Image 1 (cartoon, rainbow over the protein chains, first blue to last red):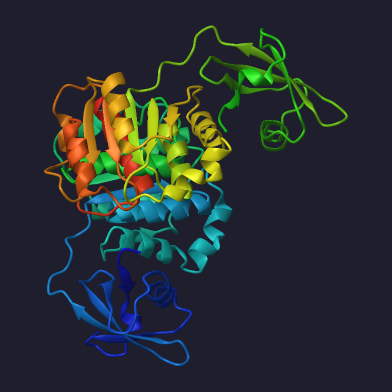
Image 2 (cartoon, rainbow over the protein chains, first blue to last red):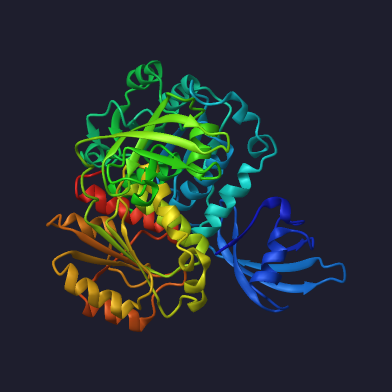
Length: 251
Length: 251
């Protein structure tokens, strides 16, 4: 954790200048056990989707509860890069890595969409049903020293996802990753101007069906590959986001 | 495992057309338990640094030993991309991910070099002392559906590594990743021609010292960053290799 993140729920007052964490809160354990802060010491803090600032360890109560005080920056971090991911709902262990790494790299939205070759049972994972996914987003943001958390959707079909993006992001450049039917690499595909916002679609581990390819084409997606080597989905996500950010001059 | 890899040690004859795996061999377990092959069924096989081909499950002995027969392709996969990584020796768990993912993406060499901010004890990890690292290389190659394994060095200092690269790869483009003292992003840095072989240097988790930056500059490394966000070392490796491969027209 390069940055310890806090949410409105952590504060008892609107001023957000003080908070108390229970002893078993992961952030309290990190401040005391990993950062080895003593009363009076400071650490880097952030308000989710708000400013960064400095936290100060004010004291440790007899029950182990940790009192903190905050001084927040006047300015907020810049918006997240205009990269939207559409990902065929993958195995939960793969989704955990993607949530963390894509957030650290910097994307605005991730849509995990039910696809024909995904397992419907993946949507019942505790990752999604308990809200655990938010923990991986916050870990990725803390790693990147950023307070901003991407918007996540995970209950829609591919058709519903494509329809919502047609409505919300009509002018973004659209590219679907596919190792089998793509005429050009993603690097070549993105090299053409304009350097507009991008929507990148990646199938689940077992890829797109012919029908899904047709739907993506109808939704104005170009197809691109990542070279002849077969990558794990989580590696392909990092590579694809990297190329999109680089073509926006951000990496 | 998209490809089951075999080495010369697996064969009792020079023709390499048959092999027997003990019941507890991970590949035997994969062929029987995951791929669910029965006698007579085939699977994708590869000879490390040699051709791909088809394996056939010939039979299963009463002690569980698995007999295999092979038909190897006449041609071999193309050479690995001319990307060399120099990486400050990281935590073993980080090194495992890098060994796997950089091999899957496609690099020719990885030099894990002792740096000032690395922990000397990392070199004593069983990852390196028992040869376990080879397993992660083979897993990355099998994922990529490729038989080629990068060359690995892990016993040298940064100075020794830079000296050996000056001798072996004098004309490669050299870029060191550094979030703090870099004038340009890696994407901008690599955009300038020529699209020559590349050497990419990444510090250990805690980065380069001022002295190491001087040594890298003296060894003709340019400095580049991966944007303002702080990435984990294993994510930065995937991003940096991706950008190098894309600028070679390979991704």
